[in-house]
Length: 466
Image 1 (tube, rainbow, N blue to C red):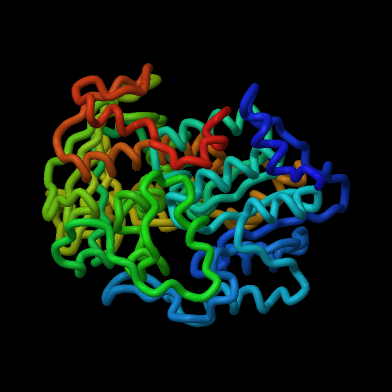
Image 2: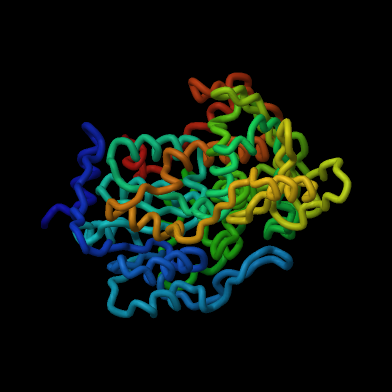
């Protein structure tokens, strides 16, 4: 029997780790052969966007629940979302009737690896890492939804893999190619954004787990839907869970073992430009200032997490307070006429100005607005937008074709996602952590420090051998 690509790669880990198998070299006027992994809900949105790009061929579809047209995706009352039957894996697969379908990404790579140039990945947070790593080891360009991965170590390994395998990477925080990205960059270069000392950021909309009541363990088993590949859904997690409706169809986000809560979900849409252009890197101290309903299994009902950053490249030390939970709003600047944040967003404080911002592509304003109007009058505020520039998805495809560089490669998205992982750890454990930015170790809490490194489920170790 012939040895599969997966078998040969796994055998290689016993010595020097997986070897990269180069993908197809793209020439002029060629399209990117894209495989979509995770095609329900947000994964389906990613698939539809890429499928509409004239530079893309969809060549494979993979989802553990690929023919499901069941009750996929519902949002708790008040939570932002728009899911329904048209967002199910079956509905999205039906738009590509002649494209091969798989329930296991490893089988897809075994059977079609030589036909795939790139992958897009829209799966639960805990499954980002093995799929992304497998693709990179095979020389495939990778677009993966935010956050980059669930844990600190996984993000670290993916950044190392980006350097080793030389593939194009992009994390899917779509606003990082929008108006706020270009505005923030231009305002910093013009000296409008400088000497930032504090940020208050919030996401205070109700989340699913807020309505679960007391949780004392993983959910009990529900009848497993027909043909679902639940073993692959569990992936690398060391304590596989039984199938439950309280895990699948998006509910995984509230569990420490599988998701990154509100912070990992929304932080990438609110803090991404602040993190990159203020060159924050990793914090030196993380503190759980408030934890309402702290639990060993699910994220708190409300939290305030503080991150402290040292001086950096001539910029002053600064800190960020993150607020989440229903009604747990960030404080409003003591400036007449400034309204509270009405939705996910932030206030940013500098020596000269106070900025009010939203999420995704929403641009910053200087408050009070009269001060911003004066600056506009005298031409001191650069007027920039994303008009005429590639979208986040287009940016990835053009980078695969060698025409652009991605705006949110793992080298940029990795440290941002590691900040999320550290914040999620504080939400889980409570307390204050001293963090050594050089050694990337927590120095005052051995238990917390041990959680920076992952326990790995037997049979999935090969993805951690770089």
